[in-house]
Length: 272
Image (tube, rainbow, N blue to C red):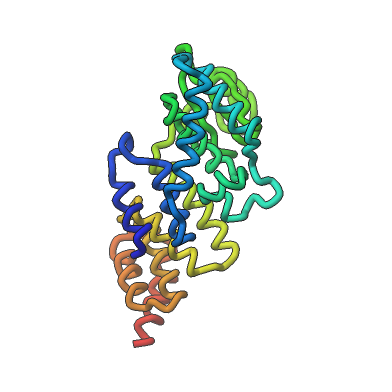
């Protein structure tokens, strides 16, 4: 287990309110960049927060604070969704996003959330199906920030009304889709994006490392244990693969893929 993975596993076991989302996201990046000095991107976030605190002075108006963050990130610094190469894994690594100012909706949302935290604004991720969003409360209502639209802001009421009259989400699921995501859910979705990228690229070595991070969040997710077992088999760790796949077979219940997994286990045992 890498140092980054060990630290990540410790971080994600904290209560959600105590979990440091920015640090945890950077630990995912550190596994890809072992020489990464994590203090550098954390200092960039601190500097963004310090500049904004000087700008907003003692304002306690949450909407004004959110406006200042949106203005700074999406207009002054031109943080953008990387439309030209959306599936570049660097879009999911927070250190790269901070330096290149290019990412995907979820990584840009993490930047917003972390900067907001540094200026006293409570902002949360929204794991909306089409794209990741951010929300906060001000003036007794909810406000939605969309990183895809250069940080454009909508009232929660307006956003819900739009969804209810569109095909973006079934009406009875609008509140569900706009619920605040826990920090673990944010990290899980970031890792899911990387898993999809490395699966498409057939990069089993990197995929296995991402799978280890996913299991650090949900150690007894049997589907994830199965996936790690398959990847261990592909990368030559046959004892590890058998251990994972035996656990899966013992706990998966009537899963449709049991015959396929049993066949793989038999072939792996035949190697011995």
